[in-house]
Length: 424
Image 1 (tube, rainbow, N blue to C red):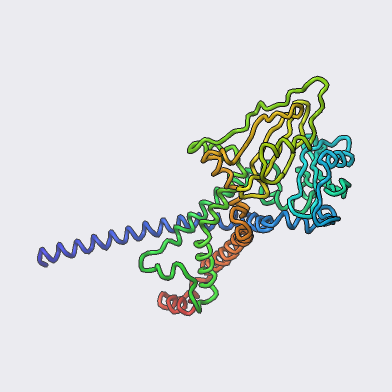
Image 2: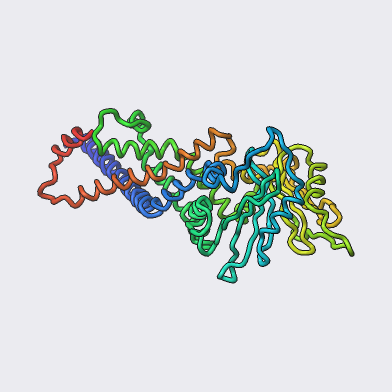
């Protein structure tokens, strides 16, 4: 053999070995990510499906709550346009229904037309370390009590209202404070699962056309795979947003500190307190609301929190016109319960970039950031984890069945290609 020919043959052999090593390395990486994706999909994925379904139910939580309890929430207006009774009268009526061991917490304004005021209060639970939370409903036209019910028992969450139980499952798996940590850990694992799915999906240049579509006329097994692949691909960024914003809601202190690394966030002073004056009584809810109206002329009242103790204060939340959430608005004032002095304000018009980013997280999570279409989108997105779990489980069971098939009955290499074509 001539020397040039031998040299060329040696180079070809080295190239072939190099390509083989690269292929083996790619296969090992794929096997690694496949195992990550499989086990995160099968175990945390099942829980993620439950969290997603409960999130779908919560997309229209306020409206459905009224629909489920019309006798408590709904009022029949005596006139087309009517005025509320004085707030102090409504609070006084609620206080008559609160037991002696109850502590009033917040006056909640009607969020929708023709609905009642609500006063929430706490009372001791059988476990001395816990509280039960109750709600009293008051007709805004007559200041008459419409009824009350138990909203939440943290120790026994099934005792509360249906949607509050759904919320507890969504946020803590109904496991109480430790459940938040579990849900947060699952969210982190599921972010890794989404990353592993994208790595496994990533197509080579020649496979681009089929990577984004479901193959028409394919067999059942291929359709299941394509549905899992494409649904995961097209919803991946939305799921990342939902998981990331959910992580902030589960770990708000950590989230605030993380945001603060990039932009300062506004903190509420911890030393806010009313200054008791000899012989002075609290100014009351009507005057506190008037002070808030004088400071914020626009917007809608959401809550007025009762002063807790002699040094407690009125905290008034009045949604700003540009806030993106009806469920959890931010604009608020803290008012001395004796003098009416404004102790502190939290105003979106004065937000830092960090505050603005932080306040967008909840409406992104609830879908309110984009109005009704956003809420419908969140309701649909909540179904995606269940579909991904079911299709992933079907795919895993099929592969497991193939691995356990007796070797003597497995198709030959050529037959595999024929069978694959028949399936697809």
